Length: 93
Image (tube, rainbow, N blue to C red; front, side, top):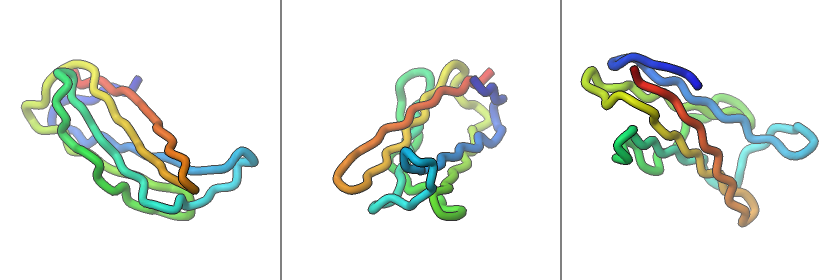
């Protein structure tokens, strides 16, 4: 699990690929949500930034007074009517 300090930037990236490992862009945008350690949503369903085919990122700037503890990141990817949820955690110390 990655660890960040208050005021730092949390870089987050996702790669979309099929079972053969070929990268592709989903039918719709990839959306990110971030929840702090108290369960409060700080980012809700925001479009991620496309870098290349199948490569997306979002940089979140932690506030100087960010709540300490384990935060949750959720990516929602929709393609051909199928929704895939990718979840990750990071800590603010």
